[in-house]
Image (tube, rainbow, N blue to C red; front, side):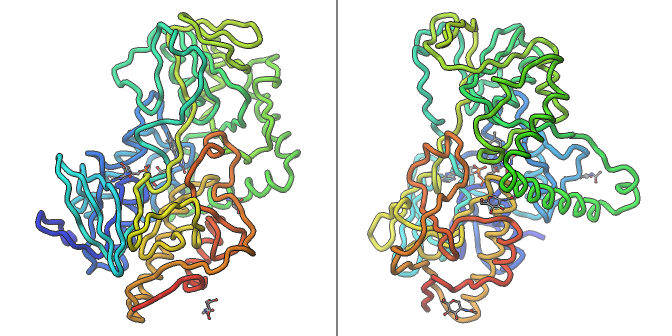
Length: 485
Ligand SMILES: Cc1cc2nc3c(=O)[nH]c(=O)nc-3n(C[C@H](O)[C@H](O)[C@H](O)COP(=O)(O)OP(=O)(O)OC[C@H]3O[C@@H](n4cnc5c(N)ncnc54)[C@H](O)[C@@H]3O)c2cc1C
Ligand SMILES: *[C@@H]1O[C@H](CO)[C@@H](O)[C@H](O)[C@H]1NC(C)=O
Ligand SMILES: *[C@@H]1O[C@H](CO)[C@@H](O)[C@H](O)[C@H]1NC(C)=O
Ligand SMILES: *[C@@H]1O[C@H](CO)[C@@H](O)[C@H](O)[C@H]1NC(C)=O
């Protein structure tokens, strides 16, 4: 069943979605379900769908989340491994789009340069094929993700310019790079480093993960464990059982870590002892300085990271860089790590709404001076939703909870004859500030122009899936919102 396909002379839409990643695709699906009559398009700067899952091409690229919760609730992930490889996730997104006739709505190489609100509609300035033009829309949905596509987080690595070998950032991995027999140092200890190290160790001569301080690493089984239940239950039901199981498990684990940090710390560290090479001490390489879930938890599917350590090809080093010279890294401790390749897995540069300038009635909005409204609209920005997911659960859950709320809001506007909805905050002096992204990770600490959040609805960020779903269904969707005809 095809929707209204975008034709070349169409310039005004009911809804324009910016970004064809997970959030944009999900938004399109939900919109179509609730408002089949709406004219919409997805504007995508790149020439392929998938966002993150198309951009990142480093060896071993995979999710950390299980696809039962990271995938769409309306399109079951039916592979036998809960944690997906990048290419499989991309194929899954493509399938989901094709099956639900979303693909014909995507306009590729349509980069949004800025958006301007004037009284009752948005004008979207677009660059395509060397020319610039404008589309208009009544409502905007930003599915632009949360980081800068063009520039990773600037990492100060002293002396890196003296290095004679290859320096690679995972965001721009050269696909033809042959790492056979290389001597590699991966700088970083986050999800990317933990993914890369075992994969590189398969072919490289040696791979050392150089970290300033350790992260929590949880070994998760990534195999089909369905057994008899999966054989007797229909696929959909089996999928929903797994989804619910993971939703509840993640929530309980997070709550446990926050309530009993010491017990959680012990639990994680005991878990590691089973996987580390015999006699390998926890300190300093596997003893994080923070408590579990103050930063995003890294996972090691089937213990691949530890298998690489046990093989003797992968190593971990905790320390600070004194300087990089032509053939390796000199540590402050005096130790020298020789290398012919350095991978800087030092993180993403956080960017809100893809850095797109927002102009409302002639004035440019500075997001860092505004509060988020229920985690998906911005104060003083009419008729626009911003898809942000969770940082401590699957992103998609948060983006989908937002879409449920948006569909309810659009229904209400239609029913009551409103055309404009704008979050308005008269007095912010009695709001208790809270960070929008509740993690202490380095890349989040460096985030700029991220909106503000408070501790109470409606002026707060995301909470958790269950309470966000509750809000989407029953919450007061007009509190803090100025509605007009
Ligand atoms: C390596 C890696 C692994 C990850 N693993 C997980 C995980 O396991 N679980 C999890 O929950 N999260 C994970 N994340 C976070 C992940 O980015 C999100 O979960 C999810 O993919 C974000 O989807 P999105 O659609 O919101 O944004 P993105 O995937 O970032 O897509 C944004 C899209 O918007 C487009 N766009 C941006 N600006 C413009 C513009 N001006 N005009 C037009 N188009 C524009 C981009 O081209 C892109 O296609 C991971 C992130 C990375 C980098
Ligand atoms: C899994 O889903 C794909 C579509 O993504 C479909 O082609 C395939 O037949 C499905 N496989 C099973 C085992 O259901
Ligand atoms: C994520 O963090 C928020 C804020 O700390 C918390 O309310 C929520 O329950 C957490 N999510 C999960 C899945 O535990
Ligand atoms: C929602 O909140 C607004 C503002 O606080 C209030 O006027 C309105 O009555 C509330 N609606 C419901 C259904 O509770």
